[in-house]
Length: 160
Image (cartoon, rainbow, N blue to C red; front, side):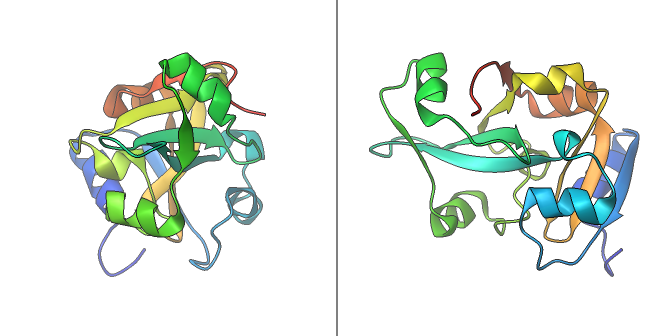
């Protein structure tokens, strides 16, 4: 653990939410590599993407996806009734969230009014590994707890 615990870990402890913390080399920013480093199944490691309306309007959204999946922006736009969506650039994602790419976490952004979505396959899992809001740290927790805390809305068919 770092000299100070990541915000997400402190929040989970305060709320008495069962979790497990994983530390790994902070230079790793690829969720598939995180799965390898933590000895976790890639299907249970989720990355958090920042998605904007195109052209930008309002606050962007957070979309949690399995590490090996690609987001289908057209399918997401259709599911949300949006005209067109785009991935935020790394710089814009960091500006919008205040977190570094590789450490963006819906759990670290509670109360910040982000709409949060998650690939529907997560509902079939018992536990999920997501960023702890700081590069080099992830947390594993029950999917039901992640959904309850973040208000994430599961969407089917948004991955390719």
